[in-house]
Length: 420
Image (tube, rainbow, N blue to C red; front, side, top):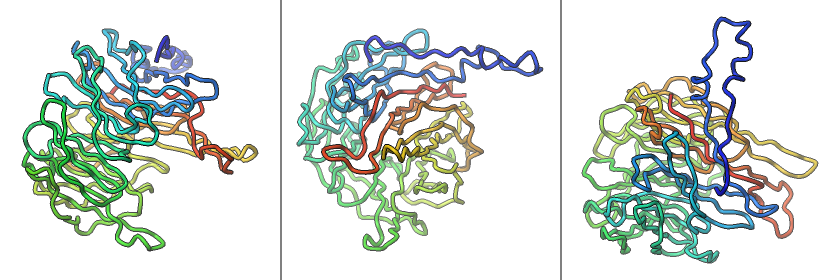
């Protein structure tokens, strides 16, 4: 984001009524509760910043957390912009960024084993709108990414990294309209195709059986032709060949179509668990048994119109918490338009047993749709902080000729909320 300043807030405004009250938070404490906001501008008149993903790492190896944000500008440039952490606890952008068209999904890993965090994204290699592939960007150790390698078949729209075959080199998992392709890394930044898995709607990856090899969980439709589609979850254990095993359904668990899920160790037993959300205010924690099986817990009630966006230890108590975004649609009938707004971010504190306390508000967000989430302790206080990408989105309720049904209409933002 060039010549862009972080928005600053006057924390003293929060204490204007202190003279009538015996209780008031200090200005310094109030400032720590407010997010830092970084602007991703629309470079052309009438354009918008389609902020898609945000990831964190120490890209220039100065001991400070940095972040990278991908943005797909409507009628503009397409980049992954790098923001570098500074000694003041904020972030500065250097240079133009890395050309990365349609970068809908971004991951970080050291793909060539040189000690520097690299990037990989799902998108178009050189502004070629006809090809969506995996692009690996190798870091030169200073936060620049001069080397670009392209892998994968067409229509890759989501990317993940993990050790699929247990050789300690990061591999790529590429989701496309046919399923998931695995590409095995050689530790030098090169990848070779290993296998394709079909099918499923949503996937997540972790070592669910503790053997050091990445496994997969996928949502599967029970009856695609039913009026109300119901999905189940299946686990597929990884192997040293880079392939995934036969489906192992999670017994006794189904959810409405469109479920999403994240993995983390929610009960502190060293095993990967799942938190599933299915588009309504009910979520479910599935506790892993360390052998690829899961046991559903009691349903978790989420705030209405909410979406689970990520997990981390945001309050520093050693337990995994859950970050939640609440959303609202704002119709403008006279213009046949619909704005999708993210109203606020909150965190439900984990109890260390797979349950969560009432969500605690982290504050409002400038109206927009969520574009991505990352967690990292950027201020070294022992609590993970939230990095949330958001964009203002407009939807044409009445389709217009030669126009997208949904498009960004202005800048995108990255919010940095300090853990508390």
